[in-house]
Image (cartoon, rainbow, N blue to C red; front, side, top):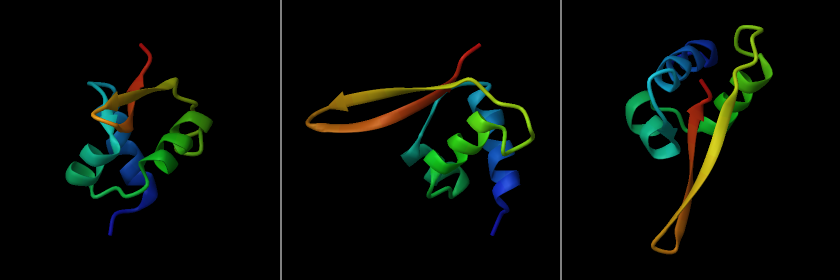
Length: 72
């Protein structure tokens, strides 16, 4: 099992190159609590630096999900 810190680092690296959804985070990083990792990154719990991560809600076919991306 990977530590929360290393998972945060991998998710941050991913966000620097594009967006991430909970499903893709689970498939790629085995992360079941993406919202928790995003919170860590936004508040500086990861490395002391607060990252400007935005959330875009996507509504499709009666379902909805969050898409996270880093503001550049």
